[in-house]
Length: 223
Image (cartoon, rainbow, N blue to C red; front, side, top):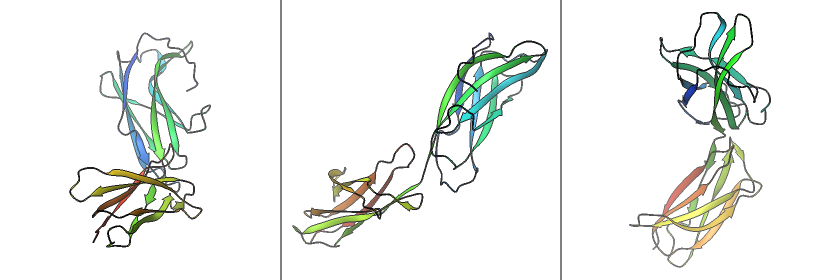
């Protein structure tokens, strides 16, 4: 649906909900995931005298704001003011999809009448995998313990990414931030710390608009 369509009918789109707003999909994934939209109107759309009367959604892919990537007409739930429709989510593009939901009335003669539009954002991110090996294990108190591992996005290494390192001493309830490492051209990171207590090391990757976050842990005993 092109931006700028005016609301010309007295029926209003009151609310729109989605079954799921965030997906983690590989770029090689087909269109197996699905999102269902539920739209509630102020009144049921009239049907008599119209070529088309219904609710629909236009789906815009990331970086393609001018032309809908997909769309579907909803089905009215009985004789209620609720309309539902589903779209398949594909792994082709990662980022924020924009879904524009609206009601439309096309008379037998005359111009198309539109309700107001409600937009929803559907996020599609690539899967992230972060590994951690805290070594040596066990380690002598006062010696160096090194947190190292690799970061992959959708099966491919990611360089230049920030990996935060945390530590939780045995018996503690929360992790303490220790520092940050940066992945190299092979997606590998390494950061050394002084071992003082037995506990669990943790690394985390924050992710981005197109990449899912990730974390990993490894327990190390200090002798």
